[in-house]
Image (cartoon, helix red, strand yellow):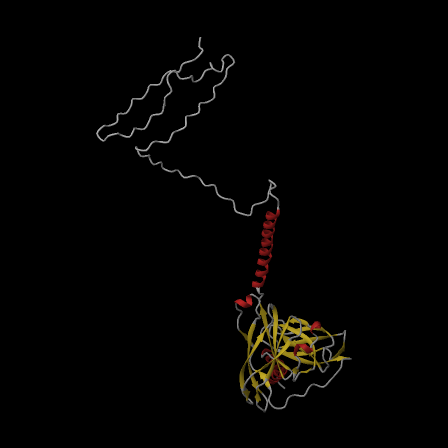
Length: 388
């Protein structure tokens, strides 16, 4: 064989060797997640290495050992059938691959068991690998319902918003909206769904919700189911939808804190002590004794009224004025060298007593005779008695 003939043959051999790897790489790029286990069986207390490929790059995954499950039917009871306390989280690399050691633990339900891998954030994706927990009970799976069978076709959505009453502790409410399709051979009429709400790591509380309508084989329908939490609920919740004993969808729900309730308690802690303090001060002010020792008057004190000045109306000239009292003279001081009768001060009058005050004009006797005013009397100098 010549050198020119060997070159095409070598190219064909290389192409045959590369095609399988290229096909597997294309499948991984297409987004088909796969899971492989280092061991197919292990006992409690051991561990198994889980590797995967074909996942979304930089995706957060959750690894769990679940009972009552198989890859063809999935985990029938949802995460309630898994050993959640012994689960592990892992993040894929830039190529969508991961490898993580998972401790072996008994699931809460009997086997058959699987290692369940699902995305925790972003677009939903999951894959299962058969695994046997040594020494754990094994029971057959429940029979599938013959006839109509519903499957979720779209992601679930929680519609609605919180109001003012929710801010003060009213129960938060939402509407779970999704599209289901009938993949069975018989119509499904008025299906009864189970809606569960779980807080944190606790198991969901299931409530039955009947949807009115009929889904024909090969058809789809839009389903809306009400969801309600307890009053004052807040934090991270998970809403699950179950039909025929199988969990169809799960939707996270972050509920805000009712700050109105917190504000109410803060105001209550401020107002009540202030009111009690004022009541106590009023009681103390009422029962304490007065400084004078007398009985405290319960009536309000009267205000001091200032007398208002009144204008004096002049008396008519024909009326006689009322007699006025004589001014009281100040007491005469007594000196040691004067007798009481000879001390300095106002002396007795030397003339006949008369009225020093001017008299009002007299009433005229006749209409033609006017009254002439009397001239004022000149003051006299006081005399002194006993002067030598």
